[in-house]
Amino acid sequence: MSYYRSKPTVSICLPTFNGVNYLNECLESALGQTMTDTEILVVDDASSDETVAIAMEYAQRDRRVRVHVNQKNLGLVANWNHSVKLAQGEWIKFLFQDDLIAPNCVERLVSLGTAAKMPLVTCKRDFIFEGDVRREMREFFFKNAADIDDVFHVSDKLSAREFQALMLNRIAVNLIGEPTTVLLHRSVFSRFGYFNPMLIAIPDVEYWSRVGIHNGVLYTPEPLAGFRFHGASTSAANYGKRTYRIELDVIILLYEYAFNPLYRPLRDAASQQRPRIDFLALLKDRAQKARSAAEDAMANSAKQDPVTSQDWRMIVAHYPKLEGISRPSWNMPRLLRAFFGSA
Image 1: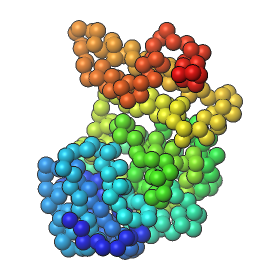
Image 2: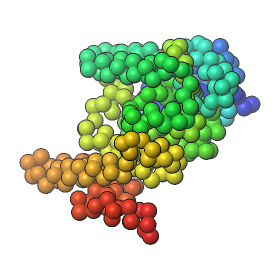
Image 3: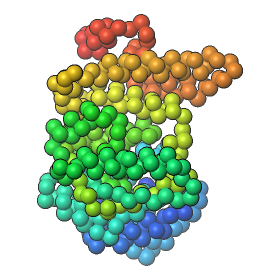
Image 4: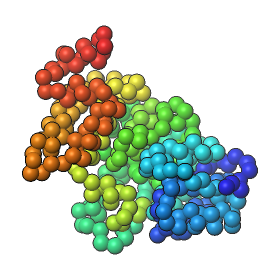
């Protein structure tokens, strides 16, 4: 159902799944923006609770709210992509169902991005910890926030080259923020594609890398977003997953760095580093360890873990070159001939 008839400047994309606990607060923050030339696009991923009913109530009250319900569950990252495809705005502002944005968030980020002609803009965020959040989790987020402040302490704008250097020194580290902190011009999706649904823990990190190495990033130290962490949040679920599956995300990231044509600027920058950074060598080392772990999980009759093996087979099916890379008998010259020679 849609009550919005003209194309807005900004689409506030709100992908949802069983989000009743904080959805009202989240939607109120979206509707309370000082910039009103927006649509609030709720894309529900087949929730089993009252998420859709709440969203529809808001759609009845405010014509800026559009609600789309997926016929079947697409999964977290696929639903992010679906939200972008349904969005009508020139700019895409993600807002996740547990999070909040300050009243001037959208207006401020659009103003900054437009003035600087930067398609990737991010802001400082506050943390909202709900319930009994472990001390190490709080420390992790506060350290990450301090790292981001450190990255941008000299300048709020990083060029593409500066961003490349940042990525090379801190591989797989999120130094942009969660999607709720970010504003993207919709042109980046036609230029660089969508979020990678094979990733479960760092899909945002990979996408910021893919865009940032070409365009750089603009940052404001104003706390314009509130990131909520609680026991049932996606972030909590990811941190609670097996270390092995998160390790596979890093392997996928390195695979993209090594082979994806869009990462050519990063590979060029890596080759100029001293010492030189070799993504294929890093990938080979981690892939062999991951393959060995999957095989050990199945071979150990006392602790058989079929899920570990299934996870490994899943990413090999999607990234078939990993089959060769992960074999201990394959040396580097052979890999280079196979993937950059006649194969």
